[in-house]
Image 1 (tube, rainbow, N blue to C red):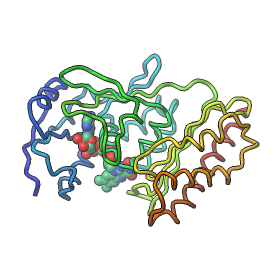
Image 2: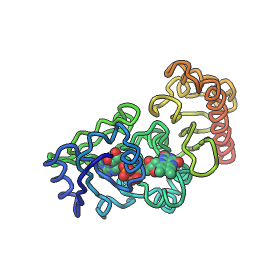
Image 3: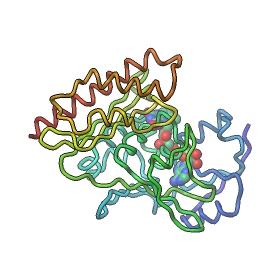
Length: 291
Ligand SMILES: Cc1cc2nc3c(=O)[nH]c(=O)nc-3n(C[C@H](O)[C@H](O)[C@H](O)COP(=O)(O)OP(=O)(O)OC[C@H]3O[C@@H](n4cnc5c(N)ncnc54)[C@H](O)[C@@H]3O)c2cc1C
């Protein structure tokens, strides 16, 4: 059994004080990842001495449109994303991803900050947030810093967050005209379904030509990352000249060159190619309808 003391913060400053003065503290937000780790005595929770509850910090629970980005407080739940009119309007990709997370109960408790900081290779919000070029804000007693989300991730279940830091929000830059996006996910079943693969694609398309491409599979590599070869292969092309099957194959090749051949490769090779094809097909149809 992992033995720890429970601390509760009533303000962000109090939480930062605790983090600055105790060692081996982990924060708990919704608890849907960390409590499982503690119960299973996972290696990630073994050094834990203090669990710091930040769940009541109202200042971290908001969705707010700013001049150039949409700010999402770290304690915003998946349900808040699904129900937010502004997120539905600007980033339907995030809504599609959030809708697939766990169950109603998990979506009501699980937070955006928890999903990012847990940094699971299969986390459903990571591919969309990377494809949207989001950055995260981290606060400590020493000040605040901002990091692009793909630089924040350091490996499976690892981030570049320093001890003493709390993630306060994630900022998603607003996209200009001509952007289309799609999220795909497959797993072993339809509900309470951890992704076997997921995928976020964001494309800028003008007059049929792709001027910006971001392709981010999840659960395909050690941690979600942009597939640059796929992006380069479609950038600048007219959508009617793109061979979807070929691009799907390219994505599978890029996955295998990152991971090598694993037990799951025979399945994931075919599945990822299909997801990429499906996502691009959907986006191209929307782009054509928009012309
Ligand atoms: C039954 C079940 C089904 C699930 N299904 C899915 C699914 O389909 N897709 C999916 O992506 N996930 C799924 N999850 C995982 C989980 O629900 C999500 O990752 C959730 O978003 C985690 O948020 P949380 O607030 O509960 O995190 P917590 O468990 O509270 O924290 C997770 C980690 O993040 C750290 N942390 C949390 N907030 C902060 C912060 N503000 N600053 C710094 N560090 C922080 C914690 O210290 C901990 O290390 C599932 C979990 C369960 C139990």
